[in-house]
Image 1 (cartoon, helix red, strand yellow):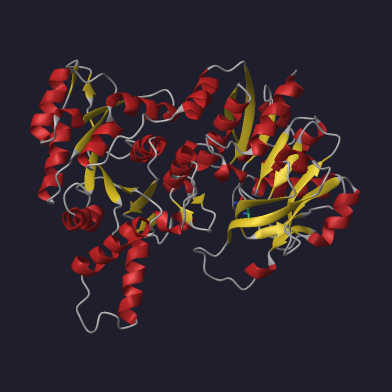
Image 2 (image 1 turned 180 degrees about the vertical axis):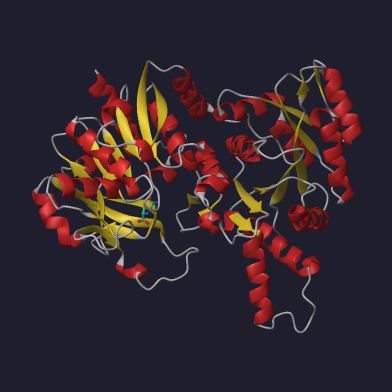
Amino acid sequence: MNTTKYIFVTGGVTSSLGKGIIAASLAKLLQARGYRTTIQKFDPYINVDPGTLNPYEHGECFVTDDGAETDLDLGHYERFLNVPTSQANNVTTGRVYLSVIEKERRGEFLGKTVQVVPHITNEIKERMQLLGQSGDFDIVITEIGGTVGDIESLPYIESVRQLVWELGEHNSIVIHLTLVPYLAAAGELKTKPTQHSVKTLMESGIKADILVCRTEHELSADLRQKLALFCNVTKEAVIQSIDAKTIYEVPNLMLEEGLDVVALKKLDLPEKSAPDLKQWNEFLSRHKNPKQTINIGLVGKYVELQDSYKSILEAFIHAGAANETKVNVVSIHSEYIDASNVAEKLKGIDGILVAPGFGERGIEGKIETVRYARENNLPFFGICLGMQMAVIEYARNVLHLENANSTEMNAETPHPVIDLMESQKTVTEKGGTMRLGAWKCDLKPGTLAHKIYGKDQIAERHRHRYEYNNTYAEALQNAGLVSSGINPDTGLVEIVELENHPFFIGVQYHPEYKSTVANPQPIFVSFVAAIVKNKK
Ligand code: GLN
């Protein structure tokens, strides 16, 4: 018999309340009590996955080991739980419809009229139970994207309603995350939006079991009582989620509020031991008590939107804590950097990260930044496009290959030092067709990369179409740009680095996706350490 229990998390009143963080925090507490817990996210948009979305639309696209391009909330799940997610952890409306329509084309519905209910809802319910049925988890938390009442959320809400009924009493609960706004003019916290949101949920046949209330001020006992009465939940099920300085404090705040205990009680599960948060709290304490501060310039083109580089920013938090250092990430727009102002733009910056990206916009500024870092012994770390820019810079300024470029930016370049991967040349569709997911990489002994990882082989996650052109490998190496990481199957250069520099490394993959609180990513950790050292 499958005994997996389900927790559904819905959101009300507004978007951006941080459902992902609440879900991840609850999962963390349950995990720390000894429950095997996972989180999945169901997103109501029609894109089959967020891979085709511009970062300005939906923030960063997170990539899993198995090559799924997913919502950035999966990054939070991994960073909190230190358990990898997969394709099954993120489902969109587009994915659901695609699969139902493919089944219809194959004739699987035997001539029936295919409808939202039951066909779409059945597909959703099946997918909601996929991870639970694997037997790997005691508790599956399902976050429903969007806000209750949205037209596009309806099939998900109906699916949750049916599932709650089918799973039977004590086998599932619904947590509703809402906002309790503070009206400054009245000097009061207001419960009405929450009441309305719970009512909307009720109209769809779902009773919230627990309310998590985002608020800027403490909820009084009276207010909690009022929320409980009008929203039809027990008093201990009104959970306050007050604004925190860092998302990493939220598990402790939820523990104080008893969110995990209420959830377990309603699921008829034992509390087991008190959550073991020793390692987590050690991290928090290092994070909150830094011994020094460094400024890292994040040079990219999506810098206006913090979420575009979410995993990179979080990886710096983990690496900062590991080094007891406050990492101040300064966003620098690459489009406005040129040879005449680069020194000015990078003033006060102790280390440079050139960000991933696509397309031509802002790349000359990135190349100029790499040159500056290389020539001025400023610690440098290039990720994906950032690594490609380092190769182009070296080809142009050290090998003197005029107009060397990536064929992504200039198809006619005389020196395509970065070129489309062979396997990409026949690709015509955009969605899910990049080189994605974890690939092996052999590290050359004696190099910086080998020293950083402390092993001969690693596997890191990728998301790209272009690659280091091996035609130029010998010339680049002879001139000092060392290829220190190579894919054992394809010979693809994954890491380049410089000797005789305080820290200079570029990686074709995305190390930021694998950084977690429990396992800070080694390059980020070493980069921060090198900057601290270099500064001294
Ligand atoms: N645009 C480059 C490529 O496709 C880099 C991609 C990235 O930075 N993620 O290879």
